[in-house]
Image (cartoon, one colour):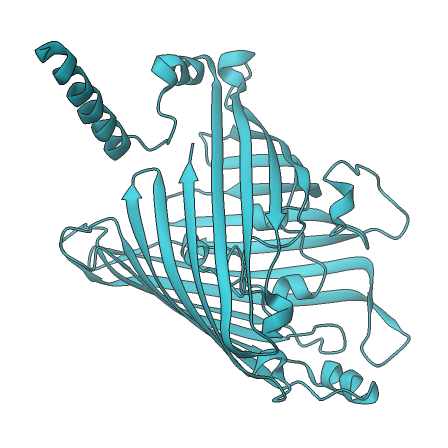
Length: 405
């Protein structure tokens, strides 16, 4: 009888320890995962879900759920085939659900995992290191947002104004983005931990954001162009606290972009962008716990083709604000997007109200429930949705959760 009573207690205690310690929800598969990685096969899977409700303002009240599953495998080809410092990545995506964006009426999506609701083949990439690991080359089926115009701090936002990348760059239609892969390549030179230089070239096409393609349209067509990214990064430390800076430029060539309020097109386009973050307060020397502030800027002078030529985000990210919750993050984002005069003129010509600016304010707290799972209550205020002044400010309550498997 004592053995029967002790066994459930033993099982419960060990499962509890397993959930608290493992960085994967499914654990090590009884040792199989470690054996796989030792042989050169590393599997990964991540899921994120968002429930959001437009409780006040906007165009109408609405609530909805959306989800994103990202799975794949990384092959260490040095272990598998003997190819020195080479890896191959194969991944897929499934997006489902819908957004409440139409009810809110804004330019920015309030649910970051909506866009291309379908199943996709995503990464099919080969990457190799050279010159004592200071130079790397990656090419295949990928997107610019895998490597450019992004920071880990953006990923905590539920709103899509900055999640993943500076969103205004996508409104131009010349930056490829998750989950829509294109043909592309990237080279990176990093002579030290502090400095790096990257150059990327990616296919652009009129149908590259077509969710029906599901990532398997491998064709090149006569109307395709190229999107070129150049990015310089600096990662210093000040008073033993880390900082990250990058500046970059995106040039689009040989791709016809429609001009606003005109039948003409533009086949050359440039957008500049930049990012800065710094841990302004640390709870101890070399301690990750503390407050990080960051700011972004995206700018293009070509208002005849860019919906939002100027966008800026200010953010705050505090790791371990509350005692006993050292892995939680307390979050704030403020994004300002200014609509172009040419876009406003086109709206006026069509008989619509002209657009000025949109402001997105967001607050959230991410509870790191276990190393592999989190839940994040979130509050968004969309000020001047779509920039016209004709839509009431919207208040969106939501919750985001995620797990790594």
